Amino acid sequence: MDGAFIPYQLGAFDLMLIPLFLVLIYFLGSRARAKYAGNTVLFKYFGQAMWAKVLSAMAFCIIYMYYYNGGDTMAYYHWGHEWIKFLGDNPGRAIEFIFSSDRDVYLDFIYNSYWNSCLYIMKYGSSEVSFIKLVSIINLLGANSMICTSLLFGYFSFLGVWRLYLVFYDMYPHLAKPIARVILFVPSVVFWGSGIMKDTLTFTCLCWLIYSLYFGILKKENLGRNLLIGFINAYVISVVKGYILLAFIPAAGYWIFSSYKDKIRSSFIRTMAAPLFLVLGVGGSALALSLVGGSLGKYSVDNLEKTALGYQTWHTTASEHGSGYSLGDIGDFSVGGMLKKFPLAINVTLFRPYPWETSSPFMMLAAIESLVMLLFTLNIVWRTKLVRLPEALVKDTNIVFCLIFTAILGFAVGFTSYNFGALVRYKIPVVPFYGIALILIDNVLKRGKKVNN
Figure 1 (cartoon, rainbow, N blue to C red):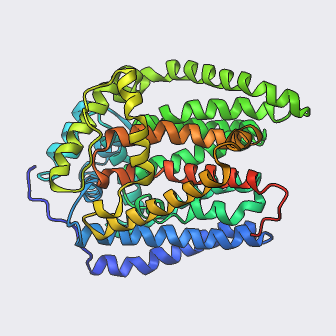
Figure 2: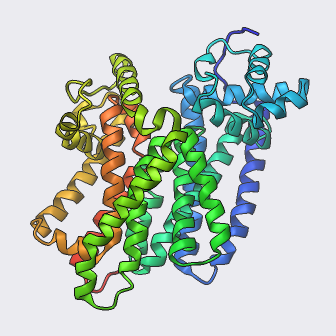
Figure 3: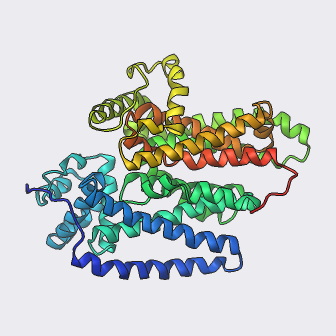
């Protein structure tokens, strides 16, 4: 059923529900936080990070309502809103839509909904439809209120990001404060990774995946449960944004294999074994890619060129009305062509937009954040003179893990976005890992000195 789509705004119903949902989140968070009562560091950061995410989710929703007056997040919510109406009219078909990919059920839902301005995001078989199914369920929990659903997204995303922090806190308790800054409190990651967006879901799932691999495989705690959690989250990533999984697999392969190298007592043998574990990690990653590649659809290795060209073309067109950038010819997908673009793409992802490239207050904030990252990087380069960098890579394999993921995903994001508005969201998973790598390099340089938390 066709109908004009009017952007959602706050009403009396929303204003009545917001305090109730904030109290609910406070109650749930307090119970979860209580387990860290004996650890002042974790107890403090849990509360601060949770409210940073939840309040950012609220701000994200309000900004899209009143500043952007629309956008993908509102289209996602619109379909979740329509699904609840569909659930009331035809419960059986509505539930079938959630758990089935049947085209007739999909069409039944479409034809019984108001869709005029939002049909673009409901292409049958797309990752957007899969995401909308999740949004519909959370929207049901959020009382069919966009802002309350956003609050739940913020809380659930925090639970994932907190798991990533626990992984690195477990390895580097003396670096609790700097690691908290880059994982829990980077403004762009907190804000753009809190609302009703696919980026929020995929980064949350990535954090859970890393947590399950670390505590399940590397620390051998609750192996079965953690492997199940890891599989579920890897599957969700593959369905929604498969290129993130493609970027993560090589890094994870190296991380897992190199963890066994760290158990070798002899420093000489451990150093000599590093190349072997790198080869084993890459080889294992290649095998994993060949096994899962066919299930990633447009993100499979065979389809990457077509997908990347589609993103570049779309975002280049969108840039005519926003903040765009170019890396030159977008049609050269040869190995040599992409290698030429590699440093440019990495630079875009990590250090742009520059302040003079911004056209809105939000892009200016992103530019300031990128400038801080650039200055931190230059500080590390100056202090290491690049001569001590190999020492850091050998002494701490977690640096290599973070840099592999940063390099692969950072290149993919910078090479395909062509629009700073899209870039700031797509690079959410890259920023924490690059920040962690810099902190760990700095940690190696300071080894032997007292580190203040």
